Image 1 (cartoon, rainbow, N blue to C red):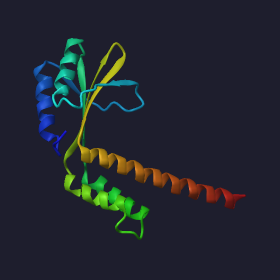
Image 2: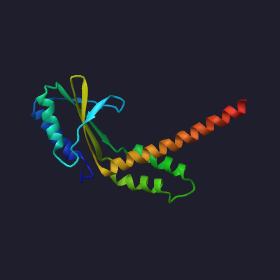
Image 3: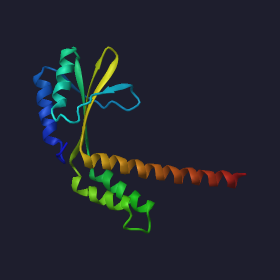
Image 4: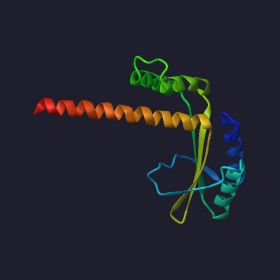
Length: 160
């Protein structure tokens, strides 16, 4: 998507889903649930086809989840990126985390889903900045896992 904030798209989706007589179920389908992801990244209106498919197969509801970049979550990420790269204040992770501040409060990801014959079907719409945020979050979490594992290993050696 070319837009930085999916808020107006969210409003369009809500109106379209309700206009088709479908119920929105607030819920996020996690990655550990087997699912089929709708392919249509080159079609900005693919989500409409997805909703029409849900109606066509008689889905009783469409799950709807949005992810907004919360300032508190971003501040925590900036702090962790800073700790990860201390004392380098020009480290790429820290600079990128600070760059994301302009997106605080914006909707960066929307997931639609429905279940048909026991299979979950998903449609995801995301912004480029939100994908970068998720990638950075994973990098920082991986680094923290390494530090925690190393710290636990040191304690194990001391106990022996």
